[in-house]
Image (cartoon, rainbow, N blue to C red):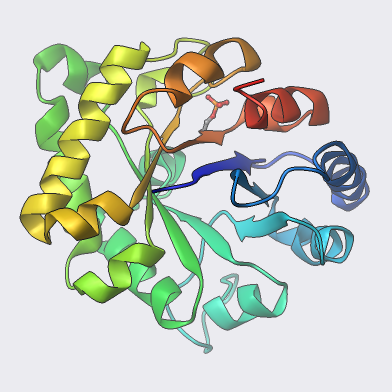
Amino acid sequence: MRNKFIAGNWKMYRDVEESTQLAEAIKNILKDVGPSEVEVAVCPPFTSLCAVNSVIKGSNIKLGAQNIYPKQEGAFTGEISPLMLRSCGCAYVIIGHSERRQYFGETNESVNEKVKAAIEYGINPIMCVGETLEEREKGVTNDVVKAHVEGGLKGIPKEKLQHVTIAYEPVWAIGTGKTATPEQAQDVHAFIRKLLGALYDDAAAQIVRIQYGGSVKPDNAKELLNKPDIDGALVGGASLKADSFEAIVRFNK
Ligand code: PGA
């Protein structure tokens, strides 16, 4: 059975000192939560990765980055390689977040390269997919999600699929306070799992964790996370405070 996986996407918030404090607070408040119950990760900005790693090392909290460059090293000014992320203690990396697709020109092809590179170097990708409001209103949600999933996973063999988490994040729900209803989210999650079954096989599809993201808060987490195909959450705003992040991790309490 898939264990739940809650990750905090801190986006471009928190400097080194603030990140250290937030990581301390999260570590302390969640010290009794083990990965067999809920797996927890925090994804601070690059500049805070090493500092946060020092705080959470040896605890149940895992570290993730928010982007990666798909080369081991080289003359790529301003970029960060998979090995560099590993050396900061990253177990996860968010790839293809809608903000990166929207503002930084990421495409299914670049997402695919990054997913492959992350897996190659032993970092588990959290691959983001999801439709815009316009696409939902046009009735093409499933087509968009299908293209994101198929494009992002191109060439990933079945035995590597277990390393991938998919985050379904409807763009219209991110940072807007508008959450997809649990039923709307469950429908897309079930669609993604069926698609994985067709691309790979049912057993492989059953292993992949599919997180929901988009205005997940303490008061809607339980309903969302109790849906059969919703295996966790990628949390933005509510992950920036230890108490609201804790309440989401303890959604069933
Ligand atoms: P939000 O962000 O929880 O603030 O809506 C989610 C995300 O962008 O991953």
